[in-house]
Amino acid sequence: MALSDSPDSGRDNRRRYNRKPGSGKWHKGRWSHTYGVVDLGTNNCRLLVAKPEASSFRVIDSFSRIVRLGEGVSQSGRLSDDAIDRTIEALQICADKMKRRGVSKMRCVATEVCRKADNSDAFLSRVKSEIGLDLDVITTQEEASLALDGCSPLLDHRNRHALVFDIGGGSTELVWLRLGRNRQTEILGWTSIPYGVVSLTERHGDVSASTAAYDDMIADVATHVTRFEDEHDIAANVASGRVQMLGTSGTVTTLAGVHFGLPRYNRRRVDGAWVKASKIIEICERLATSNYATRALEPCIGEERADLVVSGCAIVQAMHSAWPVRKIRVADRGVREGLLFGLMNDADREMENLKKVSARNTAENIVQ
Image 1 (cartoon, rainbow, N blue to C red):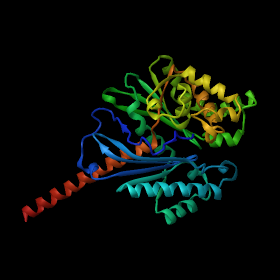
Image 2: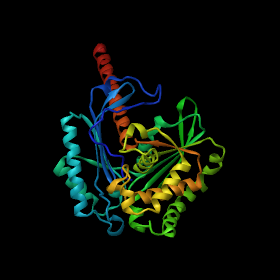
Image 3: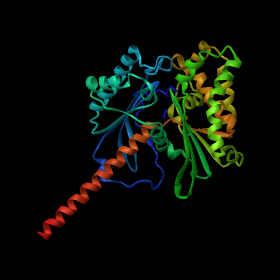
Image 4: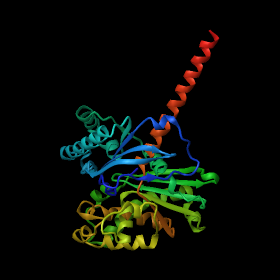
């Protein structure tokens, strides 16, 4: 589930991700691999390479590049040749990094744009033939689930409920959760809003010169937010003060970076931070009425994100209008981290199955 992601540079890659206490055991299965995951979205191509550490993992390499694979798809229904070429180049870098790091278990996924584009199959075939990567086009439901898995360590179980959102390039995923004892979570509902920062920007264009145009952008998203609210009565729970809102996407990490006045994006400062929602909305309203050049001067926005950040702001404002929480927790983690946890759990299951087969064979030999 994923606007433009926070920049990963290869420097300061050795991140450690805390997993909830007691959520896993030290299994030999996972320790025998180096893991690589690629998340190809409408706007970004992102890679993590990691090794197991305790019940979580340590990132040893990463890569993120804005490729804008979905550029123009909302109008043409097709991936453009230029967008494909940019993405192929980025995916080649990902493949090279995984090879150098000795990745032995990987998963590469594609999301909204490859679900929608008419020529996605041809693109996926080209990726396979030229780079050797198998891109798995995942459903909106799996995308939401992976994003939730990736940011679950940031859920505060002192609350009764949590609302997790992931603003991507082509869609926005929402997950409504009940938080239980012993850090248990129950998914009460989820939805995929068919607007992300790229698709919403292409639908409305530059709205910074018109307050009414920005309001129209918010209204498009609000239609879907209202439908989700009607199904789950989230606002009543928000009013009780026991709902955590957790945002995982480049939109919220960018807004947090702007809020903290960072001279350059700093993941350690942003990931896991709590930010007053009122401050986030103030920034959204300021950015929505500023021009491209002004937005581009913000160190955590820059030229690559300056045209898309306004639509991300509109999505955030549409959600906050329906669910006026006091604070938002920011997650610079999501689908990629969810993929890594999934791969490590798969390795554990494979090892357990091998043990069972070995034990059964040993028993049969003794009988004989």
